[in-house]
Amino acid sequence: MIELTLERDRAQAPTLVEQIVQAFAAAIEGETLRPGALLPSVRRFAEAQELSTFTVTEAYGRLVSMGLVVARRGSGYRVAARLQAERTRAVEWQPPSLNATWLLSDVFADHSVPIKAGCGWLPNEWINESGLHHALRAVSRVPAARMADYGHPYGFAPLRERIAEHLDRHGLPVDAASNVLLTAGATQALDLIVRTLLRPGDAVVVEDPGYCNLLQILQLAGLTVLGVPRTAAGIDTDVFERLVVEHRPKAVFLNTTLQNPTGATFGMASAFRLLQIAERHGLWVVEDDVNRELAPPGAPLLAAMEGLKRVVYVGGFAKTITPALRCGYVVAERDVLRELARTKMAVGLTSSATTERIVEKVLTEGRYARHVEFVGEKLKEAHVLVEERMDSLGLELFHRPRAGLFVWARLAIEPQQAAEVATRALADGIWLAPGSYFRPGDAASAWFRFNVPYSGDDALWAFLRKWV
Image (tube, rainbow, N blue to C red; front, side, top):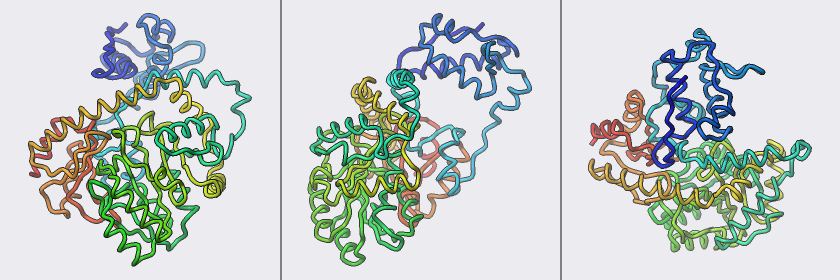
């Protein structure tokens, strides 16, 4: 059949699913397995390799999606006919066009770029596979009658309770029933806040640089976007106050911990002064805090400092469980949350109760805390290695967070050259994220965001050496 020796060292090897897929794909490509050959049954293969049947089922499913295997009810999995395999086999890689369409939508489906230094997510092999599989099995046993309706407008109650418990540990006591709203990811949470609290023509303040998807949400909403410089300890509060006095914005949007893209975290002094200015001038403060669990303890929590009078808090699980589940949340004062829930129902009805059940099971039964600790250690190691490579090239680092996904570094180029650098990198199979993606009005920048787990390839550093 095939020779398969699985490497089970989670820290070093590809996932078990990936190893199985690679082994069968190699056997099919090398014609050790001929068209029409029957694969072992899921149960038999799982027993022979001492694996979970869920692992084998996922691997076989990937082989089917690749066109290498076909599944027929009653006859199991067989190697696909050569015509089908050739039709669906990946063609030689060609770089995509670096344009707005690719960056905003296709990039999330385009897995062809070999080196993803500019992406915004964790490596697949770092996912809490055992925790997810346990949660999926648990949810699969829920009676269908309990999953047949739309669910509660605020979302699955047990998950809201887990979120309330988490926030209480960070000094923010909330009522799970009236202060927590579940959403389809943190980005949808931001969109609901914009739709509910703001109107076309309103001015808002964002960090410069800041979260690129937020900039697109604000642009689509017809808002006037004002940038305030981000610093290693927060924002430039002097500039912020001048903007507030001159333009009278309605809201300010902030990443408090491990900011995207710089990796910086607010200091207490900057947080305190920001809240003073917001209170004095009646601004909404939207605190996007999706990275807190990956940050060292002690970072200020604006919502806890202010008490939800003007702060609307956003969180999610894309960085600690998986972005595929699309589960986030908003925490706000009771009346504000009621309006946010009304907007949520108007534009998309309820969020997925099935997804929320899975997330709740991961949090309570999937060794979640241990997994977050594992990810944090892996990220710290990756930061050390990437910083060493950057120092060896003489790149300027904005900050050295030693946590989270990102490092923000400046190349020795003119800001107007950044698009050329990114385009040439893409032609070499390297995805870079130039600073203009993260600035209001796409202002040119010589700074680039690097995702540290994806920035270890020697080819990336050979390319960057050309620009120093």
